Length: 197
View 1 (cartoon, rainbow, N blue to C red):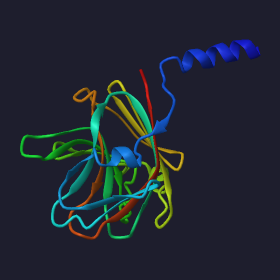
View 2: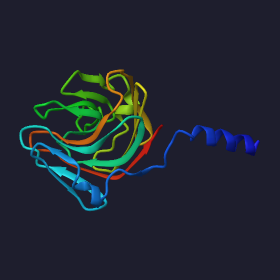
View 3: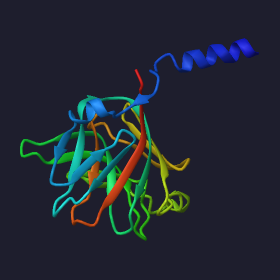
């Protein structure tokens, strides 16, 4: 029985790479800044603030296809943010694509799936009360995002949130948003990525 279980686990992980830090001091300078927000990284925590009137983004230098991204997020009340996955830039610099929401408002759609600068809400959590209760304001919140094939799923503090299929984008950049309006201060830490092959 133990041998069969070991074989099963080996097969299940045969298409996976080990999880690795998404961001480190050496690579931070290579990330692409879009907009006026200040992004700072001290080797442990990525901070974003002071976006000005328009949304700002920090985008990965390369694109990713199928992966699991895990991190912890904290945001001040009154702000709004998100984690971009499989995202792109138009010729005018506009960032568009899938975004897992960080929403500390009373609406409580943290973990929902938004399509930035394109289609709007894809999976807003308005009919998922347990998911809407998962995010804890003023605390570090665990996010897990899985992109596999045409399916995008998210979890906040272990609670399933978005689960959506969309064939449009199978790869793109990962990014971090600071929402426009100047009220957002947000932090990410323990950013780890595992690519699925």
